Amino acid sequence: MPARDVRPRLEADGTWERIETAPFDRDLELAVIEGNAIHKLIFPCRRVLGGWVKAGLTDRISVQPTHWRAWVN
Image (cartoon, rainbow, N blue to C red; front, side, top):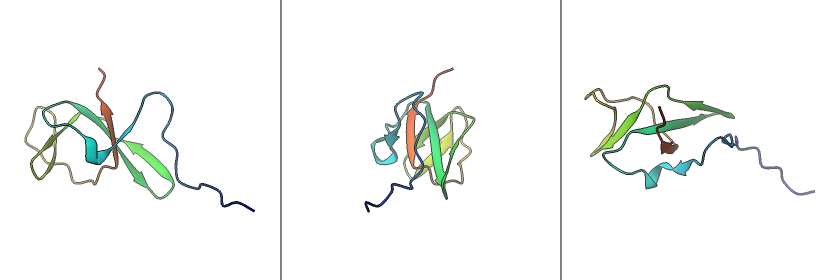
């Protein structure tokens, strides 16, 4: 019997990209996979050298995002 894919699936309302491919200097929506659940951050973020900040601020975020897509207002 083939093994089932038990990884959480990102919903189909937009294409999610691997975090390693995230661009710098752009507002992005981030997702975090925790267990079998996917959590989207509710605020735009920007990639900076050494990590991530809330867009428009210098506040670093304390999560390890796994996926990204363009932030849409």
